View 1 (cartoon, one colour):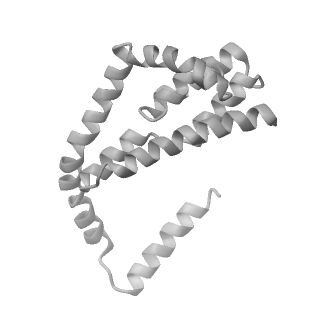
View 2 (view 1 turned 120 degrees about the vertical axis):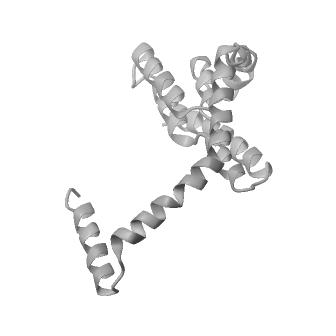
View 3 (view 1 turned 180 degrees about the vertical axis):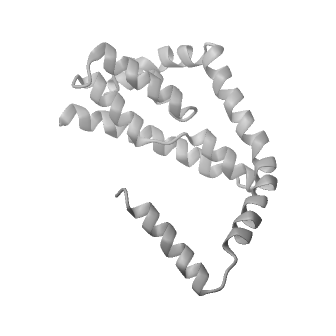
Length: 164
């Protein structure tokens, strides 16, 4: 695997030389096209980062976790994992920190630890990806579908951890 990337790089350079493509000029032209893209994406990504911070700092995350704990525990999600289910759509690094805390506190082989790891692996940071999607002129419907899919995947992951 260590040799795969250099070999791929050499193949691209040889193919470009064979086709008489000016590789450096093409690279510079492509890199120059990223500045307008970054300018277009920045407000959406900044909004998501601010909203994720506000969600946690305002206490809304903790209050929502407390409110949802009884219903989610009936569905098989242990109470310590509920905050992870809520944070995962907002922040990948924040949810990874929660997984680390849960594994340190309960153990990686415990039901809580296995469930936390499975929930972390089941979803994606929906709001970050939606920021990228909206920058391209997308609509809100896919975001709702992605959130529902993340939630269903978290429930199924905990169910499988209980059964297996």
